Length: 220
Image (cartoon, rainbow, N blue to C red; front, side, top):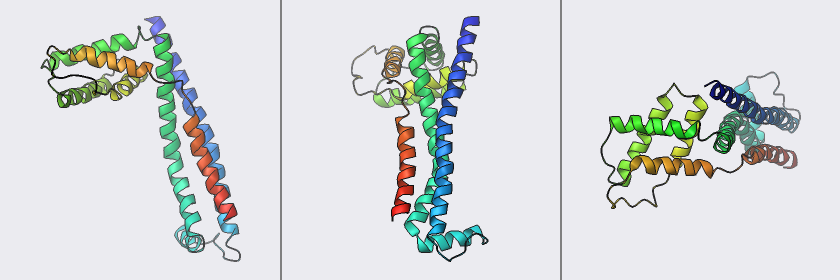
């Protein structure tokens, strides 16, 4: 029990560190993107004064002179925090999934999946007869996972993440005696094992897009 608690704390530390890393990179880039973008727009205005006017009027003036550049900057400023927050969450889940599957799957993932599936089977023992039944019950189980507050939130999020990726294309629902629990468990574990080594590639792509916009405003 003590070892499990230590590992749960370790997971939380890894998650916090990963989140800070992504959002630090994204935050610094977004701040520079905002400052440089606005400076370039204002510089192109020449003698037109925008510094002491209402922000709405300033936006209209900027848009009138540089419509495409103004839209790109505004969209970049508004969307960047959401994009980096989303990418940060995905990076965390990917990193933790990879770590747990390689380190402690038998101690955390397997027992939790069995526990949730047993709870679900007691409440809904009916046979799964088609893909629609399977998908509906999968969604219900994911909801049960999210509501199970007894388990570490990162374990819950990882299992829900893996279960969400389960595809039903290779299941023959015409065969009798299908074991829904075993199918879902095995496919969830497989989907988690298939997660590649976590990468910051998409974070760097988002940052690159910001600087491509700056380059566009500067050159055109």
